Image 1: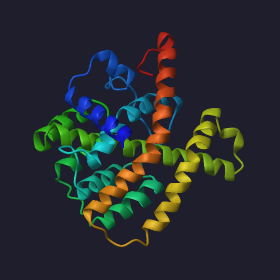
Image 2: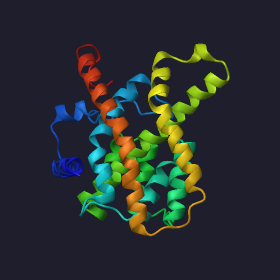
Image 3: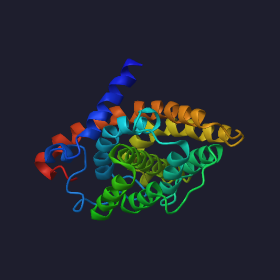
Image 4: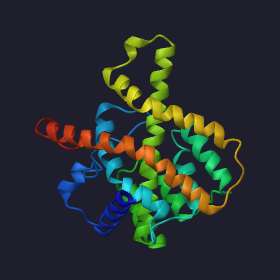
Length: 256
């Protein structure tokens, strides 16, 4: 519990700092958003290392979207954001997990909801560029900075989930199809690191498929519980990617 409290405190400080220093933005993969290439459906080495610094940064806000007073969202809003994010470059793992969680929370995705509008823009722009920044400013006006930041953290989390899930399936299909020469060392390492986690997610999807509708507090508890294994994978990978970005900065800059 002490560790969770420290994470939540860090998330509160991150939310309060509305205009981080440019150097900090660069290190977490958030600066020069217009110039940086967007993340595609599958990971490349450059986007993987860049985005994982941001994913690690957003972990506190991601958990806070479930449990932090003043920032927590109701389960229906949370799952509406997740389902909307997954509607572009869909991932079967995310479809199974959040499709079932949305059903269990009796979620109805309202296309004009401020959170849904932002999530759609985020998904289309993969969290970068002028359109995404403008959409976030509009969201802040509608929901306030704390809840808007929670929505944004959920979007980053789903970007991690669907891009990683699609990349894992891409490598798996090459392995099964005996197209081993098409698998790069990066692809293989990513598959070995995240494959077991997504296997567990696939099993969880099968269990949730036969689960009944649940009250809001239980939906929140499930979301917070699922955050733990994700954080245990993302945080060390984010630290490693940050170190690699710093080492590569003298040669390629931090916008890689």
